[in-house]
Length: 359
Image 1: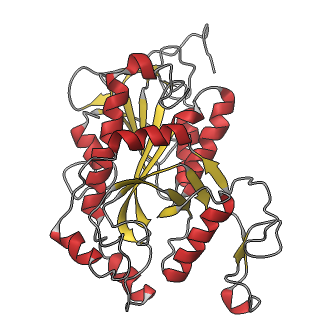
Image 2: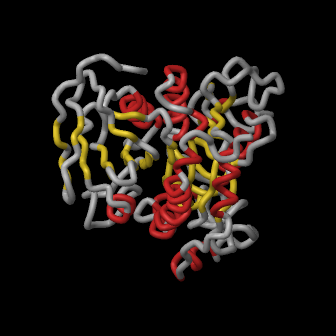
Image 3: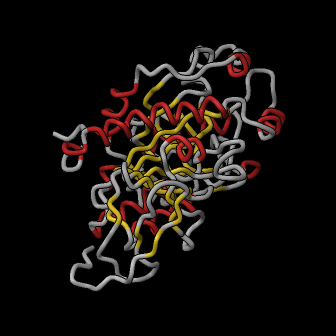
């Protein structure tokens, strides 16, 4: 979307904690002097302050990546932070698909930024399926499946031969073989870019510690959950409801398999990714972003079901007091996501015009 030839308002200096102030156009005015952006770091929540206390998804990046220029973003959940040297822009969308969609659309339509060549890295914690991996593991996703857009009948009232009361719209029951074309139930993040990111990061040693080793040891009968954290490929379900338990875990696996037509594998549960992807898909039609530059990285902070012998309610309520894999997951996100960011920035002359993995 070009505003060439339109006079821009006088630039305002963004707030900065170090270095020279950065000139940023005034809000809600035409802007010809856009800030260039190479990478948009998409985080979803922070705990307390942005720095100096217990970290959420944003704080580690903020402190370690020189994201010192604060840019007002009142039309969304949280102000933006920018590094004028690396041209990395970080956002905190807020929790849930509604907030992530709104924040992404607000940024994409904000005339202060040039996002045409920006890569979008979603880096967030998630529940992780113990059938696939341990907490602390980091999974690159391609299939982003929405866990809300559907029909539902209370499980106490469903036909006896139904596995659940949850099924796709325009179908006659769970896993109806006449699958309709997805209209928001499925988004696909560039598989070639996902594979490139995985190949670049697959050998990174991820944090492990006695606390998460003790937690995963409880998952007897789940060999992948018993292993130390790894970098992997695995797909995600985004749902506004924080679900938990073995039956819900089975549903998530079936739901991803259904919408991906057997190509995807459910590994992580999250809340925001289909909202982010929906807005980017719309913005791509305007030419202000490139949807093919979306990457989704999720790291397991907690398991999506309890270990043998523990009820879902008891396990979920205990985990809500503090995720066993939270610290490890946040470090995994930074180590794995940071490797990709460094590669993109270090060879920007190539990646500005050519998306990795493209032929």
